[in-house]
Image (cartoon, rainbow, N blue to C red; front, side, top):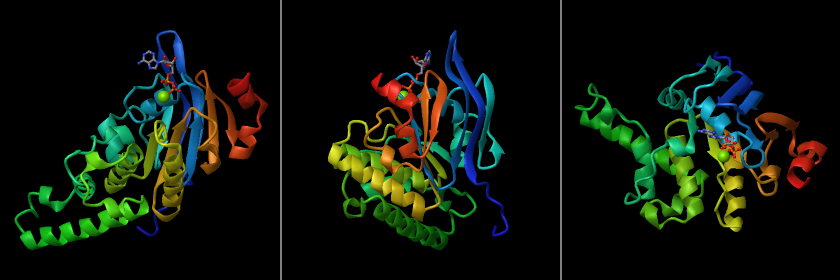
Length: 256
Ligand SMILES: Nc1ncnc2c1ncn2[C@@H]1O[C@H](COP(=O)(O)OP(=O)(O)O)[C@@H](O)[C@H]1O
Ligand SMILES: [Mg+2]
């Protein structure tokens, strides 16, 4: 719909809180993620980053607060509903079938009318849609640098390439917001920069937003448009990477 008004922010939380017994793992977190941005949630191990994302995506029920995604109040929605609405956490997507090729894996993540009992008997329609899906799958693979690997079995991919395949599959589901929990963890440092560059380009050329969770302050920070820093459940700093990096409160938790 061309007249549809889209919010500037694809995700907003208000005082989101999650407790584990006496521990306040996520403590009244209020943040906003701008549409088509690469927003980073940074903080040391145990800060509450994963718990925050789990509470947003329905894996955990919040104790307090609100989650607004794409203009909808999704507070407390079950994970599959959040996923269907277009808010995807990479690990929520079933692991790629390692015996399938890269292309087959992307196609498998797309829903097609072959699953629609009304359309399924009309074979010509189904074939047309398959053709379109293949075209779209290649478009996605090109964006993540896996185009040349399309017919390779997935188990032959490197760790970083498998992560990009996960992102491809998320895009194939039509995801609008993809939360990546430490996407460059365990990835060869040389390829880590490539991953961040692909993601950064994607958000400019595809209708997608990335929420990047990272505990280190080094590699990913310069790629972010906006950064939130979490410590002991609370947001202690926010702003563009340069500001956050020089914030004494941030320096203290990382160095002090
Ligand atoms: N299911 C759980 N039950 C109890 N405590 C938890 C649970 N999950 C996480 N925690 C605790 O909550 C805090 C935040 O954890 P987490 O969100 O994993 O941090 P991060 O992702 O920033 O490393 C930690 O103290 C952790 O031990
Ligand atoms: Mg974590």
